[in-house]
Length: 316
Ligand code: CDT
Image 1 (tube, rainbow, N blue to C red):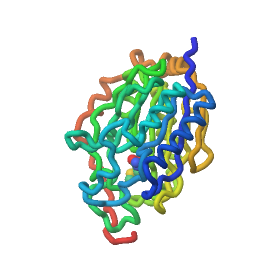
Image 2 (image 1 turned 135 degrees about the horizontal axis):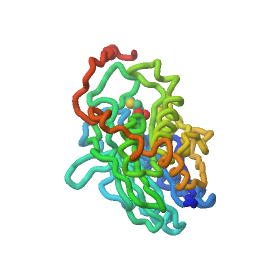
Image 3 (image 1 turned 90 degrees about the horizontal axis):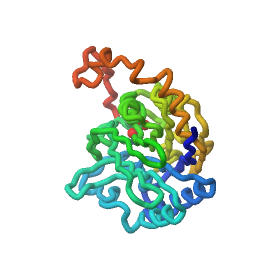
């Protein structure tokens, strides 16, 4: 049996702070058309794909509304919805959402080929910090701007079982496993990953390795495809990782972006390939040992973690 689906990772280069929503949406539509011309049926865009990565600055939260969407689609993004519907292509779009009752989330919005919403995922693992930290060259104040989501749902869509995660979520094995237990076959992940990791510079040269390590492991250990999509390049002076990738359930990278700019990579995948892993080595029903994992979701941490002290001096 085969269940073919042609998927695209629509990587973006930087979005500067002065770039307007219509300018950005024009880029998204260009990428969408490029993917559709290569027969893509589903196009994944990055995390926060409508704005610059604004958590690199700490500003009063009331002044940050300009970076959030309050409805979707809206007048600026409607052309993307219209063009996708005209082309018969589905997509996943990352953006900052401020809900009507004032909650702020980092979301990934999955849209089917007819322009209807399949689901909206809220980023669960919110990295970084809340207050201004003067020792950093740039801030990573996601914890000021976003509340965490609390679930990793999956949806029946595009002929398979599809889940989503956002950036830091991809580093956590639980992200994939919670979706794996729901039979996920395709996980879409958008990311903005600054190369410079200030709390521990020894991790900086390993960013590329860690990026693929976690997504390839998540794919293999759960018998699922993973599409990781970057917003890379130098944005407001901060260099971010690109290397978007489409990863098979074997853990192998099927396609990878080669630039740090707007770039589409396409693969024709077979969702039935997931069965080889789900039905053999990772036959969960047969081989999982949940009785040995009981403590895994408990809030308490059993060991002394030996955390390091972070620098306090500016410019460190
Ligand atoms: N966007 C995002 O989650 N980025 C983080 C950066 C490292 S934490 C400061 C990531 O995990 O890639």
